[in-house]
Length: 145
Image (cartoon, rainbow, N blue to C red; front, side, top):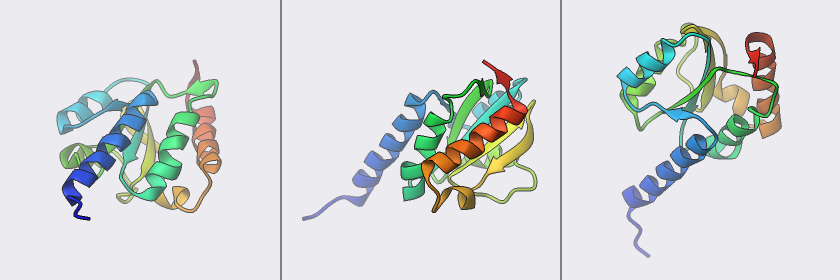
């Protein structure tokens, strides 16, 4: 059996992109997209997507399920680490005080970092534990929708 690795990875990446967009997040693929999105007033949740197992099995499901809550961010966006490198680097430039981490979530208000759920808060945890961390941040920093 001869499998083209790049073809396989393209399928994995496309599925990962589709999952997060289907959950209601806007995909940001350029540094300009990120600057524009993070300049918006209000709260913004940035999901730093990746192809690792904890992204697919924990982070993306948590990203979707965390939105079933009375308080939610005003804006939902995503960048893809390792794929859209300039967009991811630009997004990370807003995450002052936090090292690069993927998958991860950053909650910003008016373009300023409030808190993050980093990879070490995701990997090895149940999806519902991550949902609870996100919803706790929503409760503290977001308005009722």
